[in-house]
Length: 91
Length: 363
Image (cartoon, rainbow over all chains, first blue to last red; front, side, top):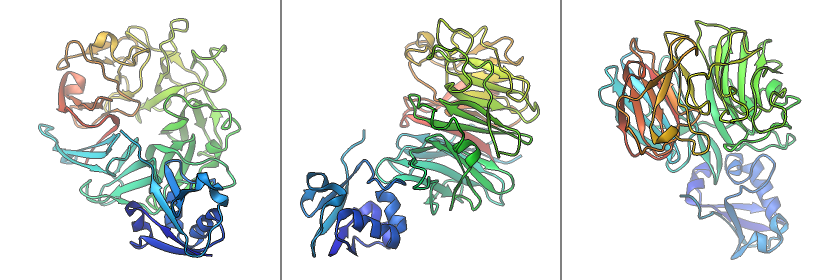
């Protein structure tokens, strides 16, 4: 499936300034694994060493948070947009 | 002797760099670098032609970064990578708690969860030091309130001393290949066995190159039923430890610092164990000039009362000028300087973000 990973501004410096990165993957988890191969500097910002998505990041498939679907197993379709956003937190 | 005094100040909101002439009359502040991201460790590496400043930037969103500056903290960039565990290891990096130089070129990073990493290329790549990181005790260490951190890395000739909270003091006598828990005399107040083999909540360890084998520990004291476990000394490379807390108002505290020209002179900031602020709200640094036999309270320049700050484990340092000044940062954002070895205190900056880490270097 050809999908687009859409990145927050803070992460674009890890992929030559691009806001969108195309990947081909059947699930969210596979899309992230592809990034680990093609964009390793970007990937370490998204997932820790164990492969877990970092705690304060949110991953959406189109408008749905992946946790409301099947998490990393959420299936992807051609044209889907996977949006990475930092959570609102801090003080 | 150099001409500039450089303070690196790791805060909840990033790294600040303060610079002064060696008169230390006025410090100019730069930063924050790594804006908005907590910094718990910093280092000025003076081994090369130009000093290099390093800092750990603990990004809660995107993971750990190592910041590096080749222009004395005017600009910073990220190194190519931060320490990372292997996927097979199963642990994930949370924070960098200490950065130290090693040998001619290497950097060492003590991290959370408690492990040690080495870089041979100025922070661009890192490899785990297995002797301590994969120690047979490592999966039994427990986090203290600050996290399971490897916060102290000290060399002692061919020996390496490591401080872990909570893990205790570990000693290598074979060049860092293997480590042994070396906690005889270091107590705990939070377990039935007052003197376990390991698991102590060591807060900080300090030594002096002119006194090999002698080290001072600020341990987690403050337990009425177990007095004398908080401030300790060893004279045999850490094989045995003994209390030097007599005369202090509390044996709880975080930092411990040794005078650069006198290994008998040591500084602590005793804190009341429940509030973790100076007893009675009256700030004081305490100094011993005889290796811990007796202590003197240093208060000149501090508020006399109604002051409730905490100084964390890496929040105090001392420069190495002829008449050294101490520096400490507080969790309420003040940066204090104590000239003449702590005799006269002055607040350099009154309202920084909460301060985790203060290091001073003369370049």
